[in-house]
Image 1 (cartoon, rainbow, N blue to C red):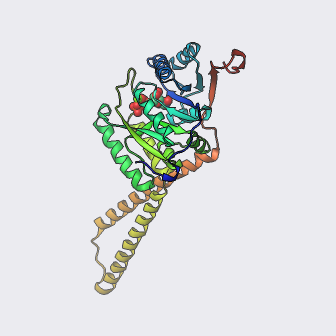
Image 2 (tube, helix red, strand yellow):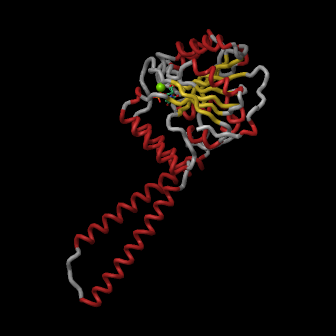
Image 3 (cartoon, rainbow, N blue to C red):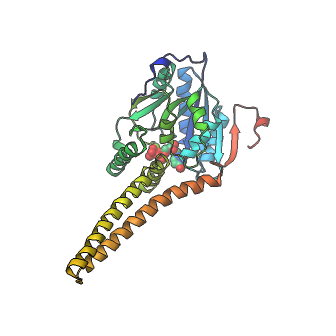
Length: 332
Ligand code: UDP
Ligand code: MG
């Protein structure tokens, strides 16, 4: 869904722009070296000025080690986390370390094709500030995951009132303006797809074919996805709270009317004992509603709790920049 601002159609770009390529990696020991070297090779063919920033998201395997070894062969920056903080955090770290005029986010598993980069860059020169890849075929994803994604985005668009393209992911180019905007957002519960949409800017979706993951397996199972979904829904809207209040008001209204009717009936026709099953049904129903409402409330309180602790978004254990002279690498 492009958001057009015609008055800014010919935004001037710097003469010889620098592009920052950000690669988050978790358990990618089979891909990382291959990927980084292939990325370098295809970028060299584009004859652009670029930097590569790889973020090891606390992988328990050899991803970090191989990343550092690859940095001896090609000029690049490595950021290693102290533990797994999640892809959203890894991308955030990449954006914080990016010094380019634009950043391009790419998965380390070859699922984001190199051919699309050139298209991203040409749209950027045309004045778009956020260019995102739209997956043409989610065939690799399996039926359960596709239905889940579909329902989630329908719900999110309805609830959060932020148009989020369901088939867009983290594969995208961000102009410096968008990077700076994202870097000012302090929230710890980061749902990147929502944040990209929230910061706005002139955006456009570019279709691309998702390729098969080259090696290893996806880190996202249904439980990780539902966790992300809960964060997405509750960090972009307070509508669930409103709905639970509305449901409360409606049930109270019915309860009062029913109570009034029972009192009148008893006064007019005398008391009789049946109604035991109504009682049980009512108690269970209300109990259920209350627990749901408390659950929703709890979800928001947990956000407040995480935010109020004000912890850093991630902890870095090591930074190595092979574009710098050795003595300037303080961590490695
Ligand atoms: N990733 C990450 N931290 C995580 C999980 C994944 O940095 O906790 C990286 C992963 O290495 C890959 C990208 O995020 O480069 C996408 O992950 P994956 O391929 O597992 O997800 P999918 O493509 O199935 O959405
Ligand atoms: Mg993948």
